[in-house]
Image 1 (cartoon, protein in one colour):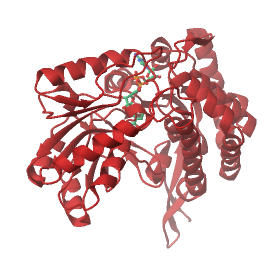
Image 2 (spheres, protein in one colour):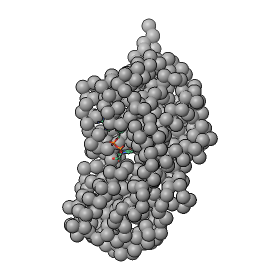
Image 3 (cartoon, helix red, strand yellow):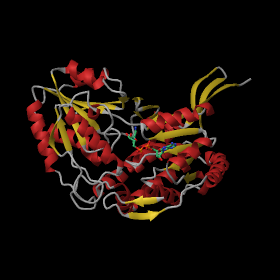
Image 4 (cartoon, helix red, strand yellow):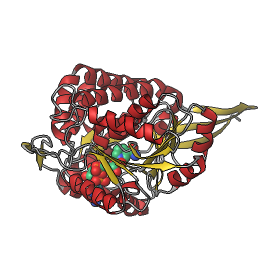
Length: 455
Ligand code: NAD
């Protein structure tokens, strides 16, 4: 398997993929090691994961350089990602004891009723490339804390980072056969689906997630899918500081080149503030430095995957045909690498693919709306349900709108953010089940009820 640098199109290295035989052997060793790992006291597992976080901190410059070289995100955004992963590990390790320890629910008259949170067993984690540290940590950290062993399949576009993660987990004290990497692409993933794992945790596109859910259904084990989004954002008419709102919401749409599951993918603006907002938004987008992701100050680097360039071109062609106007950007950059200009389209409509299908790139469609009712109608008009955001001076107004939307997350005066303290989950084609928070810690366990009566 070749690893390509998306900024230069050069081959960074070639890596041997796992085979059916090597994966079966890794699976067997994970199965054997699981009861031993489970028997280690939780506190000790917590210490190992804390050490892993310390190693991320110690090696941050090297890890960020590797991440940038294979996915093309600006170096500072790679550093932010590693630091973000550490923040999540902090919450998960600090709260593992509270949520994974046996709970006595009733204890009276010689009867004790308690819940024990047993690990699922051997976990299969098939993961995405856009935030390999963050989406990886969401799964393998709570899984390991809960006493599971893990087969982690990084995306074929972030394999080098997967290898770094494996190396540092082992250095931190995760025993050899408690965590294994499955190296490869789609075919490797398909082999994993045939093995008898005790739980499947997938992060990636709806198309793949749907297929995985169907394929593993007959195994009767938990399967959790975190998938894409077409996240809406609404700018109401009661805002005083439009300039700041435009800058913050543009960042929500374009950070990591728009390649975030919770990136703002469509914007609705109240007609009273529309012109001012568009003016400030375009000014902000034009102010960004584009170029090589290793150059200081660059905000827009290359896309991670070449194929996405064509997806964006098709969406924009369709948008223009259906009456959209491109105010800035609109095409590939004239240089080597997978670069696309940050693009703003106004006069968008829901007839356009741009407003319906995940773009996963540096393009945004914006629509004018008359009132909150119309905004809600458009925001709801989607197959996805990951996040939604409302910018307004009034918390009550924002909450009233967010309450009507079928999404896993609602944002007021913020967007494109994740916190380890609350569940991260999708609805509809964005998925089901949660990672992070107490819900995400317990997702890797099966509760066992004990009814204990002393004679
Ligand atoms: P993808 O679906 O192409 O690939 C995801 C993983 O599945 C990769 O490891 C890939 O090798 C594997 N895979 C592909 N085909 C497979 C098959 N037939 N059998 C088994 N495994 C297979 O997605 P991607 O391009 O890596 O990631 C981008 C998508 O992920 C976007 O839609 C994004 O929104 C979504 N995402 C969601 C979240 C979330 O938390 N909801 C987070 C990050 C990314």
